[in-house]
Length: 300
Image (cartoon, rainbow, N blue to C red; front, side):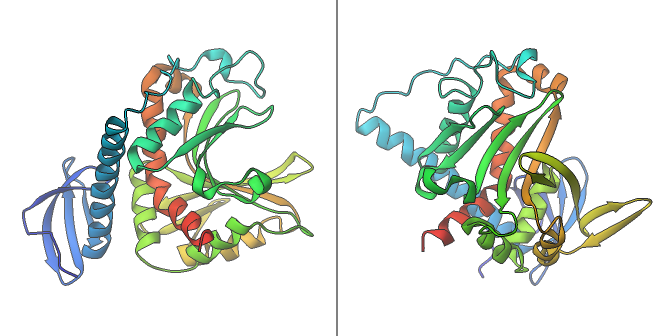
């Protein structure tokens, strides 16, 4: 691989700007603008850099095509920030999931960033909206598809990649199987995902349900050393390739929802106002390589 990095050069990844301190073969040490240093690889940083450049080029192409063809701009979003009353277990009196509000705005931002057609889908009677690449989505088996999602409850917002595993006696789900296959492989994708999740303060959370009732949940922290499971006073660390086996052992008879996500308390969301949409899209960008890997493998 021909490296585009030079000692002392200034570059940017999803965490921010950094300077290259050392290069030894594929090993590289970098320092971010806040003084934090990180050991990484040339291959990983090259992949992240190329993806950022590609997304920028796709956004420009999409804008140029729209201008040349004289496409009308989509209806302006009415989103002016979430309301205190939006944070509830239901959807009564809320509008944020609509396509002319936050739901549609998130889809529009993802379309602009990737150059692909995204749409938003409010979940029936749940304070949750799914944002999906239309090429990788089907309403007929929607529960089996990975999605970018945003959900609210009475206290907080959660946003990121959302994927479901069927309960015993049901299909585990076409995208669930692909997700497990992808995660079981140690490589650039898992390293990029780990770096992006850490940079954005994101984590994994598994929630088990029985006929819609929550039975239990487990939060998994993402660290430089791996995935950390809290178990009383001791923490267990597992590697990314071991994640599918770990998830398979969690409530194996029950339906399982898995989020790779970020979370903000309601007060922090309200303080962000309209800027909250950009915060969510930044989290989507962190999990986008995994989402795209799942969707693209399903289409083959």
